[in-house]
Length: 131
Image (cartoon, rainbow, N blue to C red; front, side):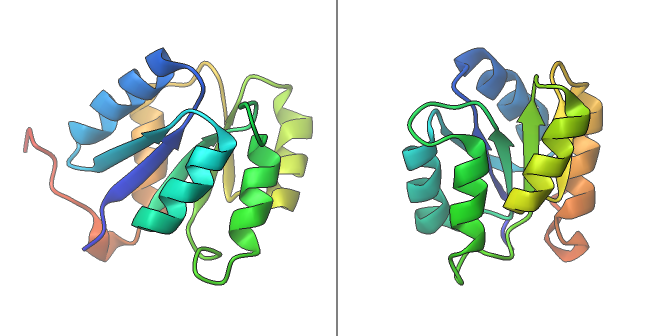
């Protein structure tokens, strides 16, 4: 059962709060701070889902999503884009790059966790630590 979530954001603060929110709900979290590291960790761990900031160094999130979608071993991993950009234009661009959903920053952590849970296969959902 894969309950690993890859969180990609150049802000360590955002990665930290998302990690705490998801680990409290039973998910394992791995983190990347840039595009090349995100692709490397996705290949290495094949996470159940990727939370991907669109504005990251090295390779931006749109390109990361596009490269993951073009890799047969990774193409089916759900990607949720996170962005502070105007959401209407970011949604179209992120969907074109292969993201299933776009969430606007700042985001509600509970809503983010629910989004993750909905996109991860129900058979793979962990039990929350507080249950």
